[in-house]
Amino acid sequence: MGRRVGSDVFDVVISGGGPTGMMLASELRLHGVEVLVLERDVEPTTAVRSLGLHPRSIEIMDARGLLDRFLAAGTTYPGGGRFAGIPSPRPVHLDTAHDYILGMPQPVTDRIIAERAAELGAQIRRGEEVVGFSQTADGVDVELASGERVRGRWLVGCDGGRSLVRRTLGIGFPGEAATTEWILGEVQATASAEEIAAVSEEVRKTHRGFGIGPNGEGLYRAVVPAASVSEDRSVPPTLDEFRTQLRAFAGTDFGIHSPRSITRFTDATRLAERYRVGRVLIAGDAAHIHPPLGGQGLNLGIQDAFNLGWKLAAEIGGWAPDGLLDTYSGERHPAAEDVLTITRAQSELISPEPGPQAVRRLLTELMDVDGVGEFFGAKVAGIAVRYDVGEVDAVSDAGGPLGRRLRDVRLSRGRLYEHLHDGRGLLLDQTGTLGVAGWAGRVDLVSDVSDELDAPAVLLRPDGHVVWIGSSQEELEVRLARWFGVA
Image (cartoon, rainbow, N blue to C red; front, top):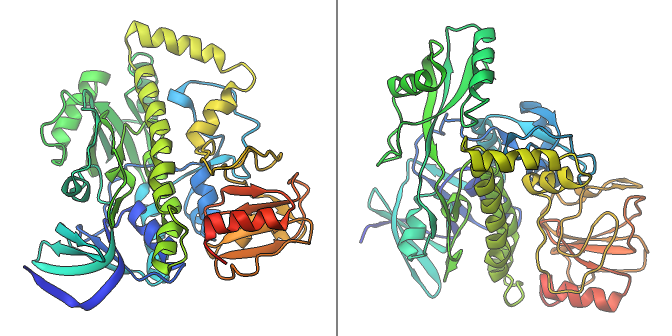
């Protein structure tokens, strides 16, 4: 047995200080939950594995009052992203007030979210690796590589695709092993920008898994298929290996030098069989891995945390209705399945083989059909998710069916998302006759009107998903009790 760190018992210990772990810490702190984040790396990574945020993640940052920070640090690009890089008309009817991609390297995204977690009071310890844990009926003892131990009432593994937390729990991780590997790097190059652009365009006619282009600060971001799948993918590629593969595919290595980061990724695709065992949960890459096609990995983890945070806080606060915490896995597991379907499809569509290329040509033609671009755009953007909230469908123009998140709508006094910053539920009442007495501190009431909302009133969970549409106080209170506990 190791030495206990102090005498504190944290409400939640989070293993992993990446974007998922830090987002979860922020969400928990909004509810006063005592959080400890344990991150193995002493310094934040400089590797750029993600290039930005999709509309749903942008909505999340807006709903928590963080979007100005992200906009100041990133670059906006119109549209919701291309499916498998297929040229297509920009979707014109995406149901979001944020119809753009926010481009920024992952270290910047990580920094902003980590700063927010610290501002809210999360305790963050770097250079602390979790090497084991054991749970009892009322808590979890977590062992660190130093031999010290910490105790939390709950443990959440946000510790990546090779998650120790998931493996220790014995959770199955079925899926497909890697068959293809790519090398990704941020490097300087001596070749001219014109040469790099011309060669990349030519190579990508037959090898869509290849690419190189400017990434700011005098760097180029390059990706190329590796010679084979590495036995140990935790070992980073060498610069010589990178140069060799560039020459193999492009006939030149572009004179790359002075790398800021070189990493590898594969097409391995796996989904955890469940997201919880007792007092231990998993989120982000610990629960699902997939190729980065479509750029949904980081976004998916942030959305996991956004779903889990308020539910775990409710459990700790003692007001969670029966089964609320179990809806985390019940809702996010299917959402991850959908993303895995999308990435599997895109992986096939970039193959140079005749069959996948035939499908690609047909899909390219379909993109011109009304509604097809919007369908794929909503999938990649993350705004097509609908949770089963246990109610008969009700439809409003803005909110769509129950279970979907409500986009930001303009009110007579401000915007809807301005009222979500504190992480509580929200009743938007356009009738002026409804109330949430008895749920103070869990649900806020906004009596206001919007030309964009065709419904008398809507009840939103803290994650912005609609769980009730109507005008009856009696019906409202049934739904309040279902999602926010006894009055």
